[in-house]
Amino acid sequence: TVALLKPEARYRVLGHDSCRPNDKAVRMYPTSKARLPCICWKHNATIYLTDHDAERLAWGMEEVRRIVDRMDTNVTGEVYPLIPQSREELMEHVRKNHLPNSHWVGSTKMGRDDDPWAVVTPRLQVRGVEQLRIVDAGVIPRVPNGNTHSTVCVVARHAADLIYEDDLG
Image (cartoon, rainbow, N blue to C red; front, side, top):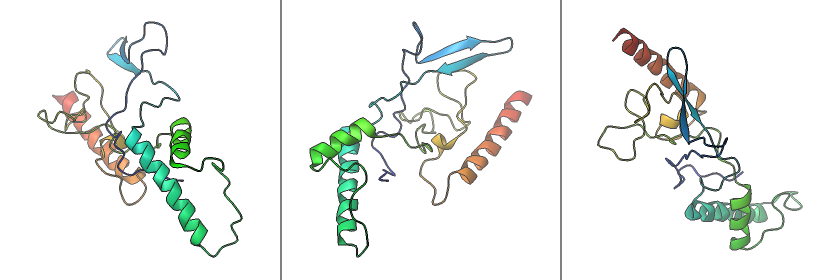
């Protein structure tokens, strides 16, 4: 597996408007107490991958091949992707077969009002959307050294405090 820890596409999680006819990327569902958001995502999209990221992933695959070639092991050949050999072929393979990482650390930057890249307030609220908070790895600025689970638990605990404060408000 080759992965980018700091992809150029970070902070570019994009909604898509074709989940159902006339849906928007973020649509508000009315309920008895609140308007809840529905975010529709385009599946198998290449919008999350920049050309620069594709090139870096292809380079990483080439590096893995070079490392394995130098190792004194019983590895007899490549299993996957097998066919792509040139940088261009690897980049095309990456574009067609990449998957966004399930942790999505840093995909929804948290910051002050004067930060144009911050889509989430310091109180974990999504700017411009009422009653929607991001309480996951998206608000963590960097991939932690260990698994993201414990860090997300801290974010969730903090979010619970914020929501409680707002409800008392």
